[in-house]
Image (cartoon, rainbow, N blue to C red):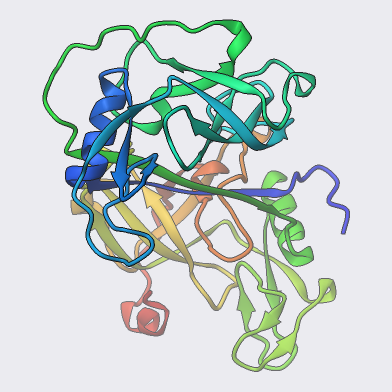
Length: 333
């Protein structure tokens, strides 16, 4: 459905995958680091990249290295008109199946041809190496042979490549559900919207478009506005651990807050301005919203309840007496 003012939700799943290379792939990657393209002889064929097994029998294959290239022949290709962040170039290029000279088999790699009119099956290409190389398949690419060969710049460091790291990434977009659109639009306006079950009368924040216990649909007529203040129903102290891409460095509190007028706590609320010694279950808090033009809902998706830091600057104690903790037991998350 149309979503005025709300772009589609964009999600990125990404992590680095590190593995040992072994003697065969390790030799291939070491050759790339040193500016050479290596294949491996298995029987009468030279396979590039080299294989650790005989594809005909499945038997282990000892590395019998053969230097191939630097030129090769394109056996098939496709043109990439709109590269993504995961592609080797930010401008259009080709992916091609390339059989290096001296090899019996081809492999898929990038060709920086400048335009699709310069690509054709059977064309000749030549390899180009990056100036700085770590021993990865992204350290080189191909260009049409008429563009001329260039010697590989030397790279210091003669140790074999024994580890390789590959960033795995998946990006996808999806539209927000109608009830989510109304919830997020409310946050941009400084309003927290929930949904009241037509069966039990309980209010859920955020609404899911249905009562998950009674299995009853909830529509726009069931939307209700709840307060932007409430009670801490549970919390934990988060001590960040080191990992690839970690941006957090200091401990902080992650809390669940039962907003006034709601029967389900909001979760994934990060508290950074209240000392742990002063934080407790039953503490009454109020939201301090970010200025209207600075509110960001991009961390919310169709499923989770996190992302509050994008719209709320901080949570402050209201100064009211603590709520009865016994009444909050069923709201602990």
